[in-house]
Image (cartoon, rainbow, N blue to C red; front, side):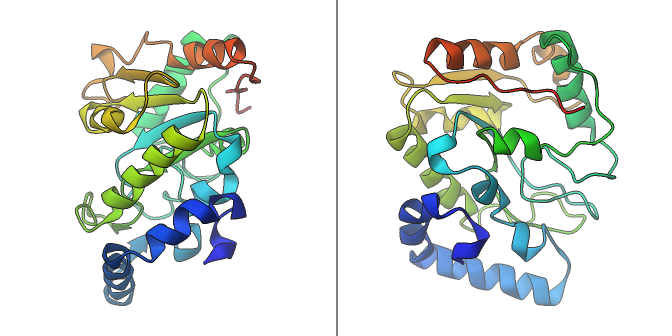
Length: 224
């Protein structure tokens, strides 16, 4: 299991992996993989923890579920691999970035790996999904696991920006110590809600301003 995530996460993850609910969840996911197609591939489920060491976490962008269509999910919230068409929510994120960050040009690729390597933890609340069936692995234990991750970051890290988009993500604010971190909330960037406050929220520049104020390098949000 260690090779699937950066060793810096070991003290957080190993105790969670030993919990009964995680053993039941692991058995469920393995059975699902034998029965049907599950995303992302097994070697990418923990990708966010592989690309962003815990001591480097500056920003957390919380998603709900992995993308459920072929080739989309690769273990990073809102991100898709090179060559995959941009999902609607990601297109809207890029539109807001164009308005918010000077020099940002909408990229052809929706691969956000470069953000992850700068300290943006792209975390989904649920880390697996059955192909073409959104929400199919919710309430199986992943949420308990990722809530523990959010709480650990709040406890162990300093001056992290949490971007909570949509009512589901906003409920996670109770896990975060707002006295030592910045919590930014808005509606979800999906086409159904984006015009009700995501556009114009300027979360990306606000995040960078906070990081700089606390002696951290800002995120280069540009992808092209």
